[in-house]
Length: 477
Image 1 (cartoon, rainbow, N blue to C red):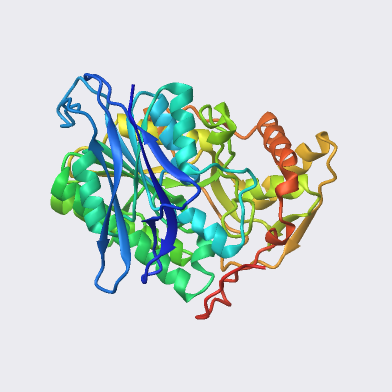
Image 2: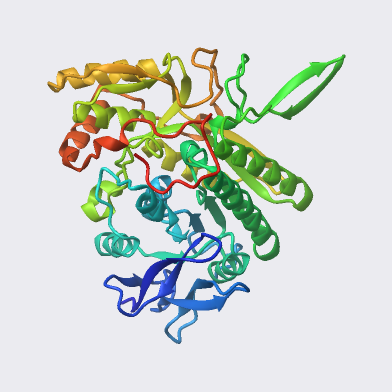
């Protein structure tokens, strides 16, 4: 039996506007984690919090796993063929990260989640809420263990704090790192100056710290980084997978595909890609950049097992993605909000394919010094096409679905050429879940089930690319 360690915590903000966990004995929610080791004598690993004061008086809490029994823990060197791969999922409490962590655990990987839990704080700051009620991370992990007998370790802290990240790497010794741990919303990065600065600092510095941690403590570790198709923009030529071969003035070379980011968020992803490519060349790091399209859906095989495992389902104008938002709008009788002309075309994929792609990347790692780029999407749709699909699916369910064109809050082409290559993951074995009538029915029924939780004030876009200012906004309206 795995032993159980408990500690209590509350969320506080330090002087750098970063969220950390601070011990607080009166907190009503206990922080409990049970962890057992496979392929060894009965032993357990627990969780402890270590405080360290910063120069300006702020408090950082470092989290790490420690042995709580005298038995020798499983050997974690990457050369051991008798144990499962150890995968660190940074950002494992988020939309893609949570589904991925459960999927990998279910597939037999040893999994640890590293997360500052800041995504939950964003909702509180902006007055937002997931359509689905989502349990605390500790309840999620306890539920997963009780249902499956599988343990997921948890390290709570900010990867921008290199001391925390270093201790986590040295303690867990990952064979692969899946990096979702970034501020993921373009609209969020365009709310105001402070959010733009936070996005770039959090994303770029966090990724740099991961790269240095791999170099210093786990040089054979494979980095699987979540990028975005938004790095490419909408060029008037086909979009290749990361690289393009060009001939100029009689000479030919293969170069990184040109980047045309369209927000401070997308720019942070471009900076990440450049930094990763450089460290692969300079340090021999092995990395796979998954340039992901727009994700839709909420259920995976694992998250559907119990309501405490439910994933978040964002429908607001800041974190909600197009198809998820349209399904919620249809469910509550709000017209579908098409930005501008609606000809904006992007790559899309089901969240079940997100977890499948990550697993494929881990199982087929890059070589030392190799920087691979995979375009991670399964289908292309324009916004108008998505609206039409949701309208037809809604009518079959008896919903009266209307569409309106609203002024586009973004700066983007509304009619353009778009043709992206996406063969590399298919070659590795990706079996896509294409957008079908049955999936749309499922999404719409899911939205109808929780429609009483919808705050209709959050549906219309509230962030303008052109009107971004220096004054900090607290709650959207």
